[in-house]
Amino acid sequence: MRAMTSAISIAQLDKTYASGFQALKNINLDIRHGEIFALLGPNGAGKTTLISIICGIVRPSSGTVSVDGHDIIADYRAARALIGLVPQELTTDAFETPPATMRFSRGLFGLPPNPGYIEKVLKQLSLWDKRDAKIRMLSGGMKRRLMIAKALAHEPRILFLDEPTAGVDVELRKDMWQLVRELRASGVTIILTTHYIEEAEEMADRVGVINRGEIILVEEKAELMRKMGKKQLRLELREPITVVPSTLAGYKLSLGNSGKELIYNYDTKSEHTGITTLLDELRHAGIKFKDLQTTQSSLEDIFVGLVHQNSGVAR
Amino acid sequence: MNLYGVRAIYAYEMARTGRTLFQSIVSPVISTSLYFIVFGAAIGSRITQINGVSYGSFIVPGLIMLMLLTQSVTNASFGIYFPRFVGTIYEILSAPISSFEIVLGYVGAAATKSIILGLIILATSGFFVPIHIEHPAWMLAFLVLTAVSFSLLGFILGLWADGFEKLQIVPLLIITPLTFLGGTFYSTSVLPPFWRTVTLFNPLVYLISGFRWSFFGVADVNVGLSLTMTLAFLAVCLAIVWWFFKTGYRLKN
Image (tube, rainbow over all chains, first blue to last red):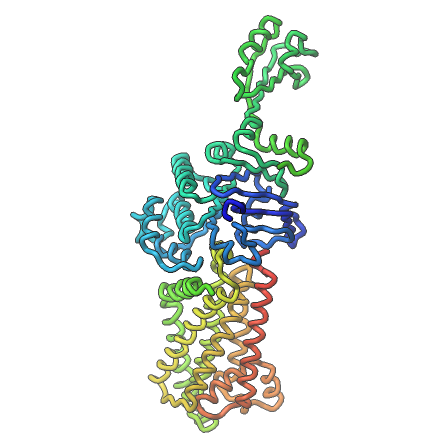
């Protein structure tokens, strides 16, 4: 039965807030058991609204969501018991100790106390040494780890991490990534939202892209990375040109800034980027440049491209 | 039923009382003692008896009610408003716990605190005036019903408020004035007929009168009516809370 159902199944989900703002439009998405799914999108794309609906914090306007086969409304107790949520904001109590706030979280989810398990999680997250400290005395990084500990307090099978590394230093970010891998290895399904491409690249099995409330792409990570591997080389010319010499036609160059720039799009993932030969051929063609720069398409650029390419829902 | 969940909320709220012991318990006790000194000793020496009861003893039920009402509203409203304010409410909303169980945890804790406080004030009063309770069971019944009803009102306030100012408005501008005007320190029977009629529109008159009846066996209004009004108020509060959760008002939208 477990293999038959998705960890999370979302069908025709819409959310329009009382203000009239439509945050989600016809979301259809299936998250597989045991995968790490990264939900990418710019700020305001609808990531947090989507997570909030699945977790029971926000009500959907229409559509259905089931968690391991349990409808989030009709069978909300079974559905929510499976989910742990680490929200984006650092919202913790100030005057409790880490074990006390974990006991509270575990109790809320209907489980009897288990000091041994709480100790294990706190040790895993390097917080056991701070077990007697008030939460307000913890550093930002510790608080963020404590949020994860609270989400794990009831031993969830599905974990949502909403922007887990926003504002987190590099070292802690790597620790988080390691923790997520360990959780996945123990069979936990992980859904993380991020607007850091490298985070998705590092962690995810599959990636979903959401923009303006619509899922515009769901793909295996490798395929998305291939699409996102496109880079651009801009050569600032000494003298402007009006046409690209025919000898360079194979590079599909374009002119920019009134002929003062030559623009070359290339693929970093391919075996040969063609940059060396292009520069050789420019020299042969007598085209001199005074500066050059490379840029990678931003996530925003890719979103815009995807919106144009995928006018409907691409799955 | 998620009893562990109810217990978690209840225990958390009761622990908050422990952390804010001075504010929660000591401060109202000191205030009550001051009321006794001012009204009981200073003014009471000029008033002999009301309905056959010495003035000092007469104000005891009113003082307990005054504290019970304001503390129930304040405790319950703060209990639910604070997680909304700091954002920790996400955990309650995403837990497998029903609306009824959430209310049971928060309102149960607020009512428990108020009842304990009421009993402490009763005991404190014993140091100032002789206390005799004619109907102890009814006294407890009124105490519990009032604490639960006004904790529910506080819970409603905590859900409705979108700032600390609104949180203060109801206890300061509605509950306290209505309690003072509802016969805390006097019998409404001493008022001129017109004002006596006006006080009948004050719902707190019924609560204070019923509670005072349980002490002395005398009341400004019929005790059956007092009980009915208390239960009606409880029902209205329950209906509003039910509607809040049904619609997700201020919580899920």
